[in-house]
Length: 309
Image (cartoon, rainbow, N blue to C red; front, side, top):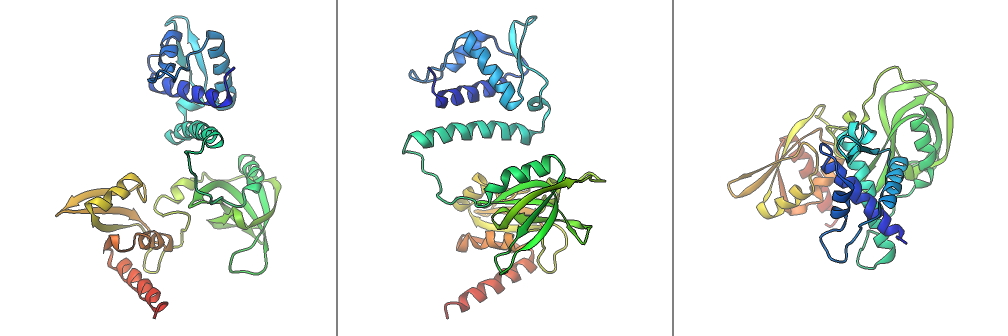
């Protein structure tokens, strides 16, 4: 009998196969051949009955429909949320499957080491998710790290966002019964006693993703003298520049090689979160422009040095 680990591995491989061969479809023989893998001991071949059961599992859990087309005599990916959805949705589906696969390995082997840091506040996840999906107000106690007392908040939650091992709920806060005009973020690890409220209705379309387009992380309060996106240029060695290429700071990142140096360009609105990211690279990088950002970095570095004087 197949273990849960093997099942997740097989389902992941099946979805990947149909994602790759979406236009042409696959016969059962083709699928079974490809499931055998490249290694002699990596044989995921299955019976037709098991394959049909797998397709039901994929449809029920992932909303991905794969049907047999009699005219082609092949299995094809139907018009589903996976086909018609955004690239992000497709990537999320595949990443979720792969993370389940890795999670099974983590539980059964000792060669995968994961970071011991755990995000707090996830006990409120289901309540927050329900509030977002069903357009319900979210009421909760919120205590900032620099405050000694929690305050009751009411939010029109629109999305969840992850940044640096912390999760945030994003939405419009209500104060004195009136909706604020700007989006706010609340860290889940500072939320207590989260409860669902009544339903709300948005009068306009809101793209939370676009709201964060020009920012690093979750901080959207610009530094002084910055009100719109600017070009931030970073100079580093060719060797260190490879770190930025393998894990870009921001989707707008562009990389060029000039005079034996790597020049990285970002189109962002500078915030303290950007400053923290830049300072984390220490002497390995140099900010070329904008000059106002260079001044801000110099001021912070000077203050840091005073801590050790």
